[in-house]
Length: 252
Image 1 (cartoon, rainbow, N blue to C red):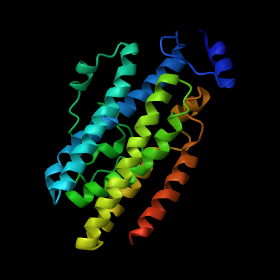
Image 2 (cartoon, rainbow, N blue to C red):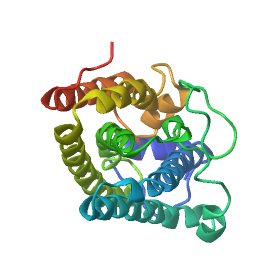
Image 3 (tube, rainbow, N blue to C red):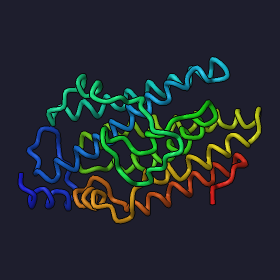
Image 4 (tube, one colour):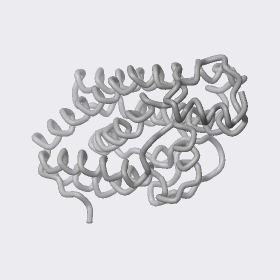
């Protein structure tokens, strides 16, 4: 299939199926999208796993362990699709130090660094239970916006995988919100607000630059439909309302 035939099918809302020959440009952008997702899930799971024993009770620790398990499951679903692109899952999982983190004071913004393709937010270390809850809540809400679009991606196998993944991410938001509210009820808002001030701009940066060339190509190939700014605005609307319900302020 050449690029012209592909674009014709996409313009007619025809899904691309597993096993079809893909033009080089589409294949490259699709792989990039899937690799960023897998790497972010693996890095996110590795970081959150270190927080399991920080939970104040067994229920909280069980919930944290479930979130980690779900993230590995999400990564596995998309790694299975990457096998068609000559990726061997077992080798891939061992190819990077997923638990590695930068110094807490670093702020990458939208700047990419070498190594794996995780979202920058997963390069920063967690500092305790409340900090982990805040990141889980803010990033879970971001994921529901970002991954929600992929349920309608032009590559049918990815779209199908995202249906269950998005449901799981929604459950993570609810878990995180409940855990965060419990922490606030017991300890007040000071620690939670400090974590919001730290994580909010870093999660916002996961939506990318307004002029991102990769986003433009994702849209061209029907992998996503909305601009980065549109998705960021949707996240801000959801998460700002959530923070307000908890008595937390949106950082200026």
